[in-house]
Image 1 (tube, rainbow, N blue to C red):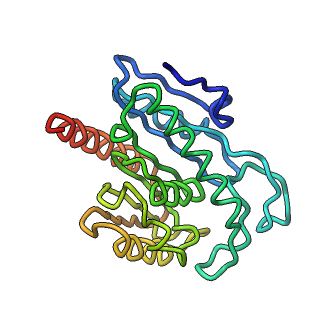
Image 2 (image 1 turned 90 degrees about the horizontal axis):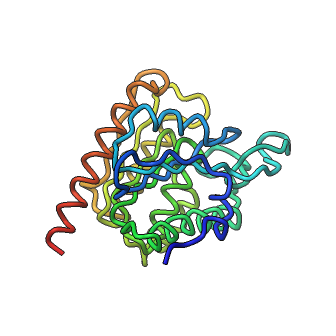
Length: 237
């Protein structure tokens, strides 16, 4: 029985790029602070694979401490952007549960979790990493662009029940990122290697800022390779 999108709040207004053939895989991609799902939906459309449905939800509008309590799209509150800054633990966990609800619905609708990739940019990438590492659903892959691991001090304990300790993670970072320093990204990659299989963590840096052209090409290759691997594994199940 198919699940109802209306039962998952983030899906009611999410931008969805449907598969052009039979849908056998899903990519869920989360935007950064102050953005919406529209921009990344356009990027996904430019690299679409015919069997993939792309879901780009919008973050709720909330006051953000870092931006003088201005109300804007944000997955959770941000107090600071350094590894030692206080964090919105309750908000991060609530946001992760909302993303897990999307994954659960896709599974209920017939897409195995091993055919779902979760990714995001900046704050959205951070939420993707946290969600994957605290989810029991085994995913095909995880993408984090210019991001960090929220609540990093709670790991590896927080990932004790994770189904993604052997899931490929692609992490990319611009060397001149003005918001999230590349050193923060490198620290995140090293932390990830202590939580999961180190050989499954790929960390790439780019001169200046991340180029959308370079990233979309990289994402296309990662999506294709991850789903091909998951398909092969299913043949042996």
